[in-house]
Image 1: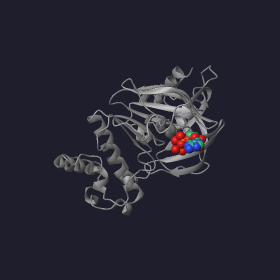
Image 2: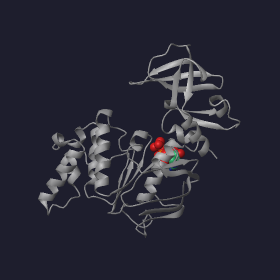
Image 3: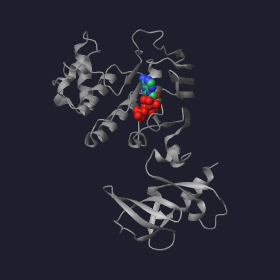
Length: 326
Ligand SMILES: Nc1ncnc2c1ncn2[C@@H]1O[C@H](COP(=O)(O)OP(=O)(O)OP(=O)(O)O)[C@@H](O)[C@H]1O
C-alpha cells in the first residue's frame, strides 16, 4: 500500500501542496484531477522521489520512499513513473527501448515480454523503427511500454495519453488498465481527461488551492460532485437555484446539473432561449439563456438560434443532489 501522510511542498517560496494525505491499496487505480497548475505533476514527482517533501511522509509497504536527499538516482525498483517528457533513447529502436532494463540472461523471456508490450501499445510493426523517427504519440506509447517492462508494483502516470490520437487512445486505455488490473499493479494517474478516469479509476483525488478537496469512489465523485469545480472536471455543468427547477421547493439552495442531465421539452420546465449550438458528434451542446443566466445543456436534435425551449431534470437527480449538498 502507498501511504501519503500530511504532505506539503513548495518550490522555493511558492507553496504548491499543503497537508495532502491518502492511501492507495495494491492493485487500486486512482486518478488525480484538478485544474492546470494545481500540483498534480508535483505530487507524482514527490511520490517518485524526484522532489523532497517540505513536510510529511510517503511510504510504500511501510517503508519510506527516499527522495533526492538520500538517493543519487531517483526511483525505486517497485515504482515506475511516466513523465510528460517520456525519457526515451532516441537513437535505438522501439524494441530496444522497451527491453532495455530486462535481463539479457533470459533471452526468451526478454523477447516474449517485449512482444507482449508491443502488442499492448499496438506497435508490433514498428518494433525495429528508431525512436527518433516516431511521432510524439508513438513515443508516448513506447514510454508507456518501457515503464511497464519490469512489472512494477505501482505506476505513476502523468497525462499518459496526452499526445495520442483518439483513434488509438480508446483502445490503448482499455489495454493498459485491463493489463494493470490483471497484474494487480497499483496506479496513480494525473489527468485532465475524464475519459481516462470514469471507466477505469476506482477512486478520484481532486486537488484545489493546494489541498486535497476530494478523495472518493469514482462513481460517487461524479454522481454527487462536491461543488461546481469538481463537476466541471467531467464536462459542462450548471449551478442553479433549486426553485427554478422544482417550483414547490421551499429551499434556497443551489444544485449542480450536468449539461447531459437536462431533457429538452416544448412546454413546461425552465424556459431557456437558445443562443449557441456546438455540434458534438452524436449530440449538440447548447448554450442557452434562462432567467437565471447562462445555461448549458445537450440536445439530440439541432435547435434554432433564439428558439425558446423548456428544460427539465429528472426528479431523482434533483432529490439526489439535494440530499448530498451540505
Ligand atoms: N520547477 C518548478 N519551479 C517552480 N515552480 C514550479 C515548478 N514546477 C511547477 N511549478 C509550479 O507549481 C505549480 C504546480 O505545477 P504542476 O506542474 O505540479 O501542476 P499540474 O497540476 O501538473 O499542471 P498541468 O495540469 O498543467 O500539468 C504551478 O503553479 C507551477 O507553475
